[in-house]
Amino acid sequence: MDNQNSKLERLLYSASQARDERAISVPFGFETRVIALWRAGAETVTNNGIGTLVRRVAITAAAIIVVSTAAAIREVRQAEETFNEPLGDEFAIADSAIQNEFSPQ
Amino acid sequence: MAEFDSGALVKAALAGDDAAARDLVRQLYPLVAKVVRAHRPRRTPEEDLCQMIFIKVFQNLAHFSGKVPLEHWVSRIAVNTCLNQIAFEKVRPEVRHADLSEQELAVVEELSTSSGDLAPDKKLASRQLVEQLLEILKPAERFVIDSMYLEGRSVEEIKKMTGWSAPLIKVRAFRARQKMKQQLEKISREQR
Image (cartoon, rainbow over all chains, first blue to last red; front, side, top):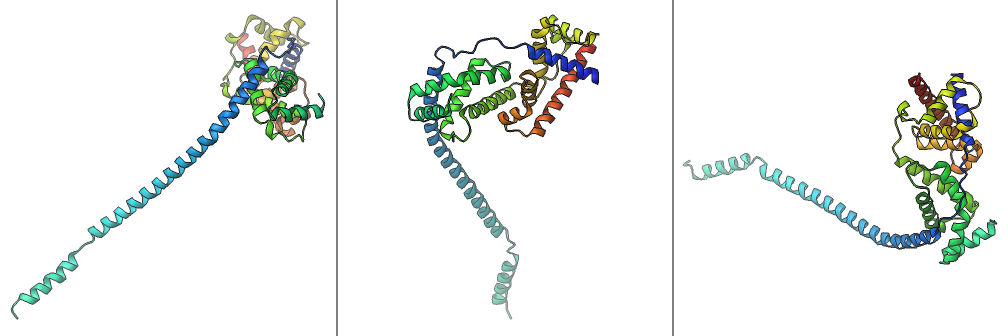
């Protein structure tokens, strides 16, 4: 392990000696490009403000649609349950009442 | 650049003075270029990355409070942009013997056969070899190795540049070194 440590140390030391000698200077037209992009970006940000508003409205609308759909489904299910309730007792009562009425005593 | 000057230039640039904004770019360019050269992702051109950093700087200029020197604030943006850009580039799984140039292989050979410092003519090849090894590291680990070993920065300096804690920096350096050692050992074995 010491050998590996030493190898890496020597490699890193040698690599650190290879300095980047290139001179640093602002490329031609760089400032103009940066400032133009910054100003253009500022306009985009303003547009994004409207975009954000539209996005929020869309999200709120979608949420309302989801909630109302869920409520509608619930309503339909409840109605189905009411229709599907066994009506046997009511028919039986009515049937026996009719029979009592018309049957000879 | 004096602090007062930076503050005045920032205010003027925010007020729409393009000349002041240009002055800011010119004064900060060497700092940004230095950070970019040290931590640039290998596949992004230097000028493109500098431009990206300056646009971020200007877009956030209104949030610059002036509590820290402008240079520190800008260098932190530069570092974070470089790290994000490195993260976009996929981490290479490993460096193989076949990926290395003759000069880089000569460096590996010399590391195995001698115990002293590498010959001065191997500086460039060793730098290239280190850059290949850095590609297997995570962006944060790469940044720590770059800063500590290639630029010779202290843990304290890295802490200021990144906002990471000292133990975190040390752990990242340790992990990065382990990975680099393993990879170097593997290349040496393949060479034998």
